[in-house]
Length: 339
Image (tube, rainbow, N blue to C red; front, side, top):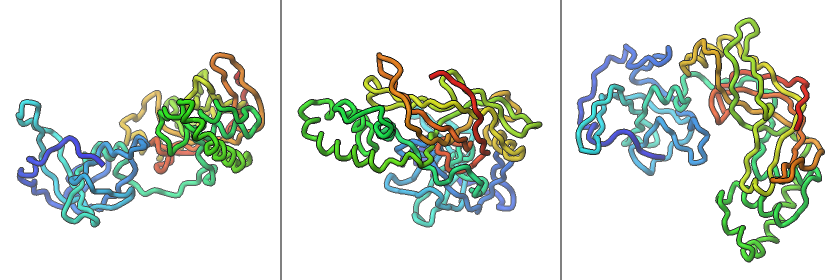
């Protein structure tokens, strides 16, 4: 985790004395009091480095697991220093969480930002009924595996290289694989790993893709948000390392024209994001698919390889990780797109 924004000298400032009976902050209708037990969520951006933008550890080696709880203890008026060493007053209050794992240290939080980013939870994580709780995320290396499974690609050196570059446990550059001698040294191992993945890949399983959608404003009569996908269709364009050699593309003849969200849930979402009544809304979805045997690539430079899918529906969430703050679910309708 990382430290940012504030520096040690502000700890020397006096602590504000605020009655525990009165809120020390009210953020989007949620009141906070000293002594409250707060729950840490997940990093907002689904960043692989798991950086919390609104939270700072007081010690570099502190590791706080998601959903840990801490007590809101004290708050003070902070200041920063500019490049000339001059004090800069900050209008917002800094809050501290006392964590049982680190009783002598503190977690510094920008409370307003933490609430808006979902890094501090303000409502319970309910077990809302999602469409396919058993679904597995389809990752970039899986695109190559799926294309082999349905008979579109074969085990060429180029395919093996692209697969290797997109493995989750490899560096994204994978420059060593581009060296012909290094590739030949690793080829047998990579080929065996790829064949094992193809053998294990289950075409009957439901997979999901995470992506962001932009909808129209809330329709109170229909209880939800109308969504008209753009020219690329309702599914995200899959990005892989090495797409200059192999470019996958999802193809479906279905879409979700309307995302159902209960009125009270939509109100809480729009209040938390300061977007009440706006004509457009942005949130994040898990789009559920089944891969079906199908088609070869449809262009020459670079070759675009179609992954035909049965698009089943989606679950909508407030944040990119799609792990909590579920908004609603919708199933697909038939529509015709040209690949």
